[in-house]
Image (tube, rainbow, N blue to C red; front, side, top):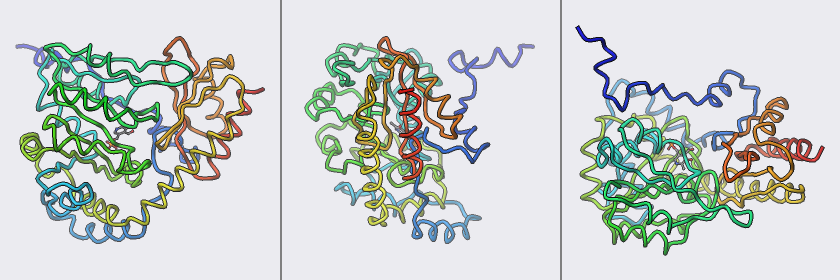
Length: 366
Ligand SMILES: Cc1ncc(COP(=O)(O)O)c(C=O)c1O
């Protein structure tokens, strides 16, 4: 008799469960200030809480396929209707669904690093070969490098995924470069998880009307502040959305998240408040730390700020450890571009942001 281990598909065998240690720690120790996972520091609005309670009362029933919320999303984005929208249990599930529709073991997915880790995790589980094209670090700025992305394409490439604005660099790529990549015809995911902070005017949604191969993904985890509810979506051509929806898990989005999402999408005042709050706090942190000698601050259009403190002589991981001693959770980043000074801070409450500024200054200047 063969052992169970011999039955695993080779590309899954040996992969451990992904555990986000920082999130586990934050739940275990709620006294720590969460400035590590690009969450929204503001709790859900009253309207969202009302929807949660209302639909909690019918949680004994299966959810439908989200026609109402999908129609609302289509309307907000100037699309024809719900047939242009696929919803997921967070946008992470949306990436998974798209990847499963296009990628076979051994085929390639191009990502532009540093970037969000889920592309790699979902690619791994499908046996994809992840092709990481680094952004260019020049003049204290991380530049998108569309030429290198185009050069990395082979006959095995099945998906190109780029976040815009990118996490962790916080900046946008130019529209003309999106067009160059869209023109390849390859399935192209533009991850707009943070686009609401700069406004939908910065979205590449227009490309989906001309290029069937372009899919936009969004989430309610960031500017809308519903990370714990898990709601994300993809926008695209109706035939493509229809095809990838075939791979959806039935009832993948629960009743409570989908109606809470609708309430959040309708509560434009609550969104405007969160966006304004975030953007002024980004400015506050960037301005407050601008004079720290040797500290590189990456200008952000999202709800986090990336730093490289390599030139101060300090290490990013030591900065993060020091902040944790002071009760603040920041995010470390791997060594790259010859520097071990990387770390990222998510915008917190006003009080948390002031504490963060003090802690960074204290550690890097003492
Ligand atoms: C670039 C990017 N995309 C997507 C997500 C979010 O995912 P989800 O919608 O699954 O919460 C994140 C969260 O950190 C992110 O940084």
